[in-house]
Image (cartoon, rainbow, N blue to C red; front, top):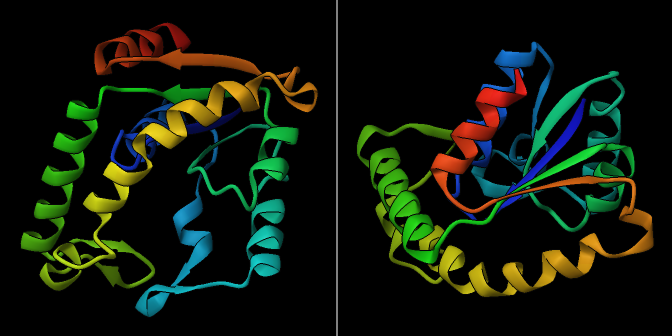
Amino acid sequence: MRISIIGGVGSGKTTLAKQISQSLTIPHIELDYLYWESNWVRVPKEIFRERVADSLTEESWVVDGQYSKVRDIIWSRADTVVWLDYSLVTVMSRITKRSLNRIITKQEVCNGNYETWRKLFSNKSIILHSFKSYHKRRKKYPILFKKPENSHLNIVHLQSPKATQDWLLNLT
């Protein structure tokens, strides 16, 4: 299987990808690690695209993240897209808890990057980003799924954490 997991910021893409990776014993590719350098420096688009393409050479994989810069690469090679389409309340609750936990425990996000109180209360807040992008993404995905170049994809539309866990149990 070649699975792309998408969904709102804080919906649980990475957690689900890790579970699928362990369950199916396939590689897990986390796009944040390919995109962010230390000190929250973004890699140039072409380097990011090259890193993603290089990471998808295995027969099976699960990738989490939804960077539009590389969607064409991922979806052209994927056979399944899992869309975690949870309620705004669920997503906001999860991202808030996750961010607070990461700040308090000083848990690394990726490549030596950390969430901070300063960033949390700035215009670069991941919580603010999650809120602002929520409705836009929910409108965008059904349109993208209908495009001819994506007709080969099996779309798994999961609308609650329980539906996701039920789907995961049936995957193995």
